[in-house]
Amino acid sequence: MSRQKLLSIAIPSYNSEAYMEHAIQSLLPGGDEVEILIVNDGSKDGTASIADRYEQMYPGICKALHKENGGHGDAVMTGLRNATGIYFKVLDSDDWLDETAYPHVLQVLRTLSEPDRQIDLVIANYIYDKVGAAHKHVMSYHHALPENQVFSWEETRHFRLGQYLLMHSCIYRTELLRTCGLDLPKHTFYVDELYVYVPLKDVRTMYYINEDLYHYFIGRDDQSVQESIMIKRIDQALKVNKLMITSIDLEKIENEQQRKYMRNYLEIVTTVSSVLLTKSGTEENLKKKEELWEFMKKENPYAYRMLRHRFLGRAIHLKGAAGRAFLLTSYKITQKIFGFN
Image 1 (tube, rainbow, N blue to C red):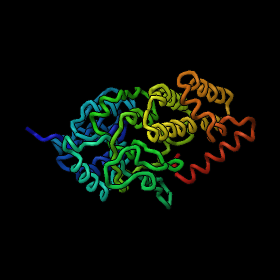
Image 2: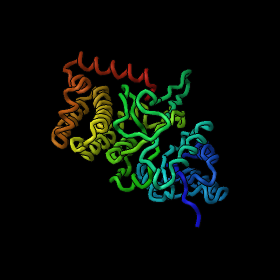
Image 3: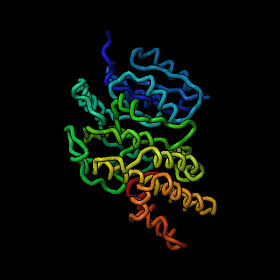
Image 4: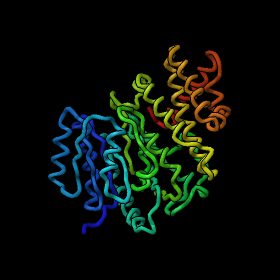
């Protein structure tokens, strides 16, 4: 009987022929312990043939999964359904894993692979690999999390502004993802927040590796994280935001540290939605901002009470041109510090 894979890595791929091989190549040093699931999401270019070629070249390591186009979230869910690894990670097709950090992370996962030692969430750093940026900002968690040990929420410390977990930093236990109620919607951008947020309610044990593992490439004009594109797709961001609001009743999270982190996570996502709606400048989108907060007030009153009267919640609702100017200035400062969008 073949041994269970240590790690399954899904690569959602749509029209990715120009860059997906870099992503795949960065994973191959994991050898037979790693399962590379190349999910061709109904591509119209050479993505499918590249996926098939790697499956033929590396049988038992690479697997090509072909499906009708359903969007990024649907491709992630397809990868998860086909995963056989103890742990599961997502690598976007234009990103890659660091050649130095990757072996160390696998070494740690080996120590956490026995049934009585498996944990819920492994965390590593990620790098904003922004085109043209002289300084590549690293999202590190060493101020907030204990290093190189299994820990619980009680042992976490204060997370700084903008220092929150993304899909890039998370390696979840596969079975936890399958049992936590995760169901990413089809044909929807920005599901990364849901992917991280929903399973967090079931996370009890964690392990932080202070290694810069994930290179998050930013710079293509068509990337979904470009601000102008985010504004055009604001309805999809709002859909994800609302699913976050309704998916978890924060009041039922018993652990105070866990509840606080998840509250802050929902706060930052709702703030970004509100800022983008404000920045668009249209009356329609300003109305959508108010509707978003009314939706939270109705569907998750506890979250509304927690967020509405905090600093960002008050800033978002400042009236008039001065209020909007203050909000947008704060957003620009955050962009400059953390290098996103």
